[in-house]
Each structure stands twice: as C-alpha cells, then as structure tokens.
Image (cartoon, rainbow, N blue to C red; front, side):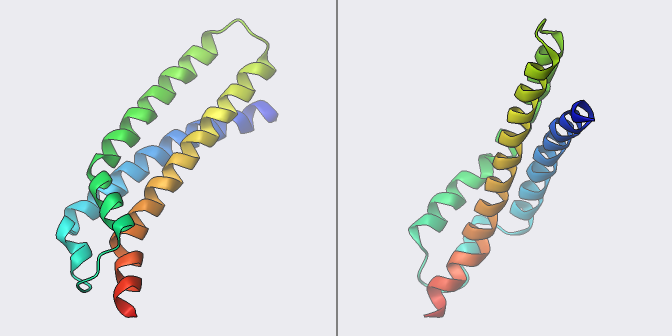
Length: 121
C-alpha cells in the first residue's frame, strides 16, 4: 500500500506542475502585465517582482515536470532497496507540490491581492 501511495503522490505532483503551468499561462494570456497597475497608482515592489518572474513560470513548471519524470525513470532503474526508492520519490513529489503551490500563490499575490490591498488604504 505504501508503494502505491508513493507512486500516486509522485505522478500526481508531476500532473500538478503541468496544470499549474497551464493555469499561469492562461491567466497571463487573459491579464496583461499592465493589469497590476489597473487598481490604482500604488504598485507594491513584491507585486512588481513577482509579475516580472511570472512569464517564465510555465517554462519552469514544464521543465521541472519533465526533469522529475526523468528522475522517476532513474529511481526506477537504481539497484537500491525499494524503501529508498520510495523515499526519494516522495521527496521529489513533495518538492513538485511545493513549487506548484508557490507558482500559484505568486500569481494570486502579484496580480490580484497585493495591488488591491495597496490601493484600498
């Protein structure tokens, strides 16, 4: 059962990275970079920094998802005990989920939350 859960977490983390890349790309296609200035004259520095990094986010998500898939093939090929392989797969899956959450949070904070909060006062 532990093996099935570890593999499920690893594969679902790769799917989450691909879905996050698609989400960020679609939101960036709908809202241009000038969107963060549409809430008012004050644009927080963090929002500017995140907005400058966001166009590269889909590329990073797809690249890390493909690298994780290659790591998964490498884990499968190693001649180590199964418990070591599963632990590595779980760590890679956790890092993938963390990156997916970070990219989504960066999108929400930079494009929607901080500009509204900065201009509401």
